[in-house]
Image (cartoon, rainbow, N blue to C red; front, side, top):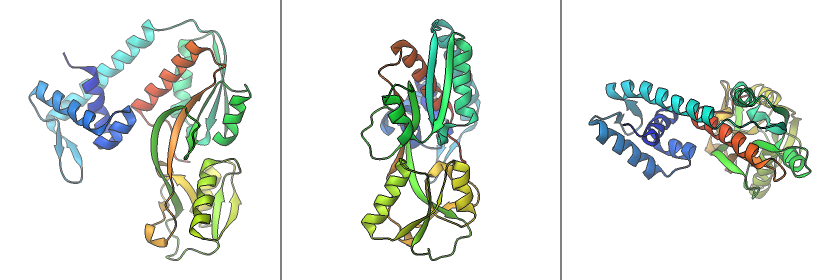
Amino acid sequence: MLDPLLLRSFVAIVDEGGFGKAASRLHLTQSAISGHLRRLETQLGKPLLARTTRSLELTPDGERLITYARAILALGRDALAEFTRTPFRGRVRIGLSEDFANVAMLGVLHRFAARHETVEIEIQVGIPGALLPMMKRGELEMVIGAHCETQEGGRMLWREPLVWACSAQAGVTLPRPLPLALFPEPCPYREAALARLAQAGIAARIAMACSSNASLAAAVLAGLAVAPMAASQLVPGIVAVPAERGLPALPDAEFSLFMSRRADPALGQALTAAVLEGAATRPLHSPA
């Protein structure tokens, strides 16, 4: 019998395009992920991935197995959902950062609500720096969003680089003072960007105060400003500023799930598990 743990690691390697990203997604070490793949290949007696210095490609046998692996894991999730269904009742208020206000995340929450018809889900979209204080005041039961270099706690979903984003048509020389597009305070990307520029002695000005990812991306696409953005948020026409332009490195963005102590523990655990399961099978954040 094929071990679902090994299949989950195999699928993560394929979906993420590498062992490191798969390890981050499943909250395992890279050596553990590599060991899972070796065990699976040994059990089947066939290589599943063709490794080169730059990429990983599925072998013909890997192509055959990936379809079965996805089906097996999907059946396991469905069975678990069916037999762990609990008659939760009441309202749960969830704060979502702009990064998560998309079809993938909302689909996870909709499916959870469909399985638990007596639960009412209310969603507040905003900036994590504003949503977390709301949760502490008892106005939200859960917050899902990004943060940088903080000790807020929570359950990390994944981590990725925070980059300086500019228009692909931008000139070789960046203007000074550096024009920035930023969310209003309190925003972790804003705080990290301004702190790094100040430490590097680079003058900057806020060219556009944005209220959404769409307006932030528009400012960058138009060439009006440079903005700190998670690497996955880069869309066609927006690129990361090359290191040789002299801007300081930014910290990683950490995407986490936070749960209030006031929340119903059983409901909170079930909802947390649904979000983590969704994050393990597909990205829950999307570009602007």
